[in-house]
Length: 67
Image (tube, rainbow, N blue to C red):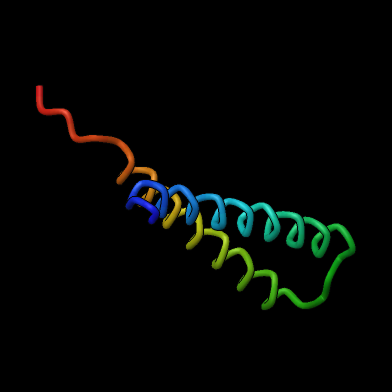
């Protein structure tokens, strides 16, 4: 059975992969001068949402140290 840490690490891997894929798609769409700016904006918003979720999950992996 997977531990909570393993589950978080697996989810992080999935999110990072999707983030990279979105980055590639956005770059290609803007390089070819895609006229569908609304779709590009949606992809960028999704990419930002992924970045926020990645940061949230990464913070769960860092133990709280009270000095």
